[in-house]
Amino acid sequence: MQEQPIALGRTAEIYAWENNTVLKLFYDWVSDDSIAYEMKIHSIVQEHFPVIPKLLGQHDMDGRKGLIFERIQGPNMRDEMLCQLLKAPKMVRAFVELHKAIHQSEIPELNPVKKRLRRDIGQVEILSQDQKSKFLKQLDSLPDKQNLLHFDFHPGQIIDAPDGPVVIDWITAGQGDPAADVARSIATIKFFTAPAESLFKRLVLNLFIQWYCWYYPRLMCKFNPEISKAAVEAWMPPIFAARLSENVSGEKEQILAWLRKKGY
Image 1 (cartoon, rainbow, N blue to C red):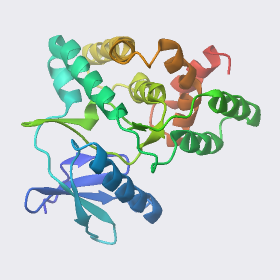
Image 2: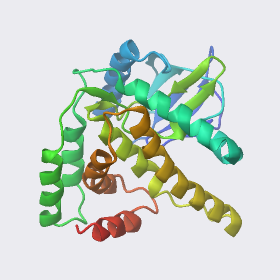
Image 3: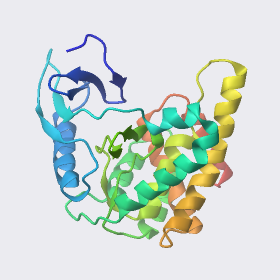
């Protein structure tokens, strides 16, 4: 195994492994239950949606638990978009088509995403009980469906492989309303804080994020008539509030400002 990881995620490091595979080596704080749940989800999803890396086994190293996956060669769509901004509209259309394809499957064995959102909202310490009650009341009013949702779907999760795009990182997958998946995708991009590079690069990235968060949901509504702008917007407050439980660097103040603007 290489000494340095080939990729870093929020819950794990990814290392090149033997026989064209990768080892997803989880950080110490990730619970055994979470890892077992990822294995369960991945096994279920790959039966219904084949364009995902195959789960091949488990391997523990240095006291840390890991999963072995098929290695998918190719750049991710996020990096391609940022390097080829003029081609970004075409790439977003491909992204939307792939997202729509995910929603075609119904997998009742998966946990409802509303169950996860309810748990995450309850864990956000900076929200008052009154605020939490408002978000939970709105969450309860939203539709229950059994469509497959990735629930962390952004361009960085798509590998442009030689045989076609492959979607990675399914630990957050569940069942629910496709409009919720769109709102969650917006949450993963909208509050991203640009790294402290040159002023010009930060400006370009911030403009790209604003454009993406405008263009992507409109295309989703166009490609899938079952998703409406109003439906996506109805999911945003509880999903953005639940996002606070993840403590993503640089997001807290932006999310709270957005929620205050919406009257929460």
